[in-house]
Image: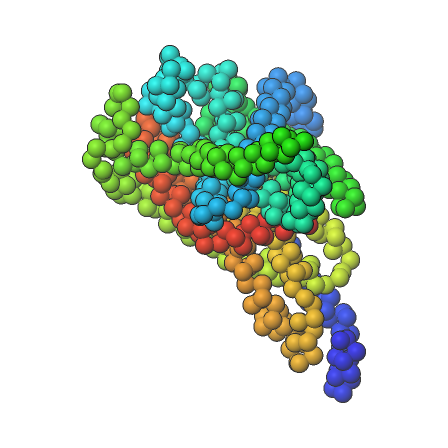
Length: 311
Length: 287
């Protein structure tokens, strides 16, 4: 193709730049808007966050603003709430992702079957995933509401419960309650990802396995699962990262309370910036959050690369 | 041997019949039950809403909660709604334009640092948005952009652009390069072939990308509460939270607000769910 264009070009005046150079320049030009966006809204702010983490920067104490080196990080290491929040993050991520995966997989297997109204149902079942986090939080706050919430009412009617429970203000139950809400929200994500994986498994393989005498379970274990490994790895890893970073739901439902029972690292960071207006400490927390995430992302990229090469 | 075969086929019949239907029933009830409850709540008047014992169905269906939420002067839901509509529409259009160009460049041109750039876009998606709040707030304050739509729109780019670029790279890579080359032989410029050949072919993908940008910015909360101070500048998410924070929680108007915030994304999603799912999984499988 390029030889044709060069031939055309040579009939006219020789262009200032070679075709190759012009193509490259066009490519770079197309990238400029995206690069500017990321520079202004991601790269510069991250640099700024690192800088802020080295300063005493409390919004309502401007007279104390000064460089303090690593003091914010030392404060962080000595802060028991930070360590509690890391543990809570682990519980939150592990609980949410495992349950979302299990129920999502079951949902994907169900939706993979042929039945009337399948397309409509698939769309409807995605709803919990597309609505805003605030809306999810408010819906479930109302369901959990001690006096007028439908969850207490149903449990009492069924005879499983005697007294009304204040789900979100009980330190022993609050984490389970927010995790359950997050599970509700995340099931559709796994369901559609895994459904796409299921649809990519060729039918002939099932046929062949059936002819060889493999039962339902054996077909699932020896055909479906191995072939779906790449999408399982990708879906789970993205979900882990996303859940770790996600602050909206807990912020809306409990603000990390009661007594930090649901305080995960990302909500703790948010509360430091939003409620305490301690930007220096919030920045230090967010830098740590970023490092944890980068380490995880690097590990994830290695794993997916391994999966791709194994293919 | 014979007995085993019969039991195996029985298992398969059960799986295809009762298990399937019971499973689907439970799944649907679990996924949609909370919405149904919220809808019922929004249609009850105050007395029925706070009745003991709990009253499940409204005796007299009323829309007063919707009217109240929409017209309340203290928590102007209509204003929140329009704010969101504007912020999300502009974010959507701009994000789509930016990511079409960048996605095309990455999919078509071989340049130094291309893989690195893709990795940067991927890694950016993994960043916690709480990381950006304090520095962005400082930045927008320095630029005098607090309480403006621009601050919210620009901030939205931080999470829409990295993902939509990935989606677009996936779509453009799936379009055969030969089509453009023959257009260019026929005398189209590079840009001309992008507009006349590639864009029409990628239209479903571009639409999905646009919808995606709209839906995620519709959900955005943390930037909206951090970069606006006036009630009149709040978006839907921030406004709903504001409705909670005002007095005691008014579940009637609030449930109406929840339903009204859900409807637009639900409708958009119904139209484009197939393309969006395709985009998400294509990106994920390749990424």
